[in-house]
Length: 102
Image 1 (spheres, one colour):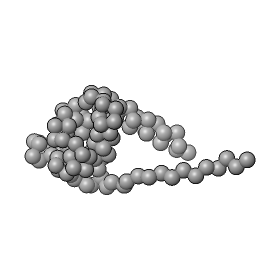
Image 2 (tube, rainbow, N blue to C red):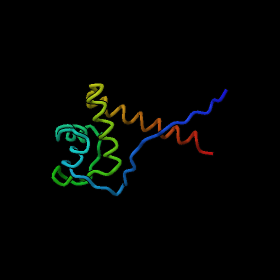
Image 3 (spheres, rainbow, N blue to C red):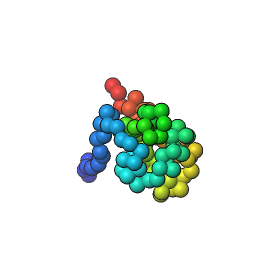
């Protein structure tokens, strides 16, 4: 019995030095400016810049916004729930990396 299984993983590499405006992140994630404002207020996203017209988002923020948009769209999770889910997902990722270290 052959137990070897092939798994195809698909992902997008996003460079951390990427800087997106509010409009660009909204377009990339198919979300509204209101979502971004709520997520920044809740701490889901942490833009660079002092006011909304100056906000710039990194690749890390883009990844978080994409996940957040799926949580809202597919599961109807509210903003505090999105913040909690993203924090827990990142904690799981950190723990998995620690387990895989020699």
